Amino acid sequence: MNGLHVAILGATGMVGQELLDVLVERKFPMTNLTLLSSARSAGSRVLVGGKEYAVEQASPEAFRGVDVAFFAAGGQVSKDWVEAAVDAGAMVIDNTSAFRLRDDVPLIVPEVNAEEILNHKGIISNPNCSTIIMAIVLKPILDRAGIKRVVVSTYQAVSGAGGRGMDELRRQTEDYVAGRELEAAILPVANEPKHYPIAFNAIPQIDVFEEDDYTKEEWKMVRETQKLFKDPSLKISPTAVRIPVMRSHSESINVETVSPLSPEECRELLRNAPGIELVDDVTEQVYPMPLYASGRDAVLVGRIRRDRTVENGLNLWVVGDQIRKGAALNAVQIAEHAYRMGAFTKR
Image 1 (cartoon, one colour):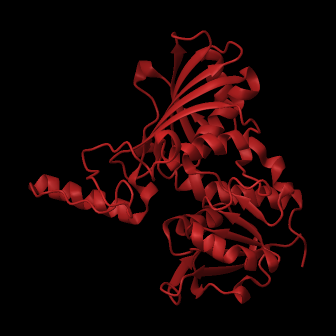
Image 2 (spheres, helix red, strand yellow):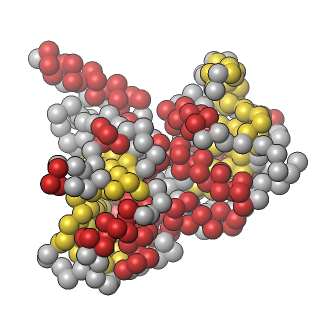
């Protein structure tokens, strides 16, 4: 079939801009591009692959003729516009949490469950960025040895809180060096009453607290991973922490497998798994770090070692660019798979 008409809702935001970069870099088969935003950003102009595009205000008419619409403007915006996009015939690939746990919406990480793409009814959801990073690593382990339990601690970059989080870290760092008092207005949650500095700090709260005093971010990792692997009984114990890193999330993952899996076998398994780059040579102090994962497509895995406290336990250190693979790249890969599968009807 011919190339696709692509729309991006939230084109001027951080993920929207990354989507544009990924589409160009991967030479995605698009013949038309529509950039959409709120009234505030409408009228601005964006350079994409050497060509300038005007950003339009979102409207029902804007989705006419669109084959695939990437939504990256926040959960409420997705809810406001998804019906118009789907009614116009577009496949919506949503980067928010708005539809992830709906039974009629596939939750997709292509390296995990690409076959579910064809089950869509107009909407496909991108999982949470931390879920994506973890699921890519767990999938080959699950397939080879089964999984009884996962304990995961995340160390998440401030870009996960958007550009305002990044700006606050820069400002607080400058203030700290200058000996000024650190003022906080964004983290851990912008619309909550209490805020803490992130510079030279670690905040063990990402999003609001929910059931059993786990945060919404932590429950996302549990429920979304269970949905991805079609196993609501899969045991996952998460702790999510914000750290003063600009970009790329890190995760310490402890996996208890059903069958034995040695560190050597695990390294070889992950070395050959899609979407993963093995970075694991402690004799040379080689291991994943967020500074070196930023801008990379692959999820980096290292520090693979035996957990001697359980019969079949492994520890892994995992780092991935949450704006790229954790959002934009994963969404584009979904569209690429859908294209190859013939999921788009010819107009």
